[in-house]
Length: 360
Image (cartoon, rainbow, N blue to C red):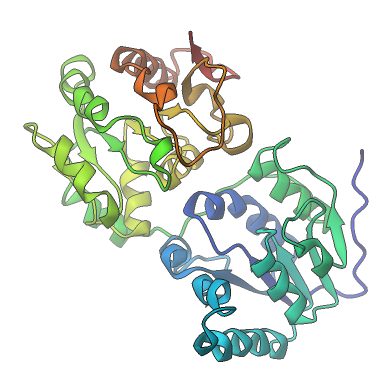
């Protein structure tokens, strides 16, 4: 169905994007930001962001201000009255900024409540927003969450606002200082392994990651760099015991992580923020998938990077599992075979596939 754009009596001068987390979701929203900025170059664009994700947008050339959102406070003020003043203080601050347009890309109670609290004349979100958030919008975009990739859903919001849906550009804040820092630590040629995830069930076994180090060097001439946040330190230690591995877990901020990934000749990562950054940077990528669906949250534009087992229980979208067969049974050789195909594709030797690699 064709989209009828919203007509604005005057160009919005103050725009707020609400997309607090997670890192991968923030990356998915960057093309929509690019379209908003292209349509309204003179507008002041603010982004409501969780502290853990601030780094990916810090200093972004298309954003005028980052507004920090301690989402835990809004989640807990029902049973922790001490946070009530902070929550309503944020709501009052947003209202006083007199936004002309608020774009809620999160679609949950917290983001919907803050969208409503701005009192902006145009408040847009998804028609299938959960937890009552849909009641906060003046305009609703009719798209179902699991039927389209997040990048495409966010572009539909931009199209509804009259910004079009092209071009798709992922603009990052990374600069030369970030690149120089990475160059001082990383080898000349390397693969990045990112073993962490926010769900344990999305984690390809760390011993499988460790088993990649030697063949990556012997078959492809690539040294191994491990990347991730401080919470992935224990996983990194299990890989870094091997000779020649550079362990950068916890040693890069998010902008530096982008710089690290943009130079990588191969990235092997779970369904995680680093995986989505690598896809946005168009790097050769292998992404083991288990409980989640690549159709909805896969590496946008790089679905052939996904490798998964054809099991009747996958995808289950579960954060708990007693066996994790979908990833434990996904072997090292299958990932190495996929890595070879991705490296060759990156060198222009093959035609990319349009769908994930499914192993039976």
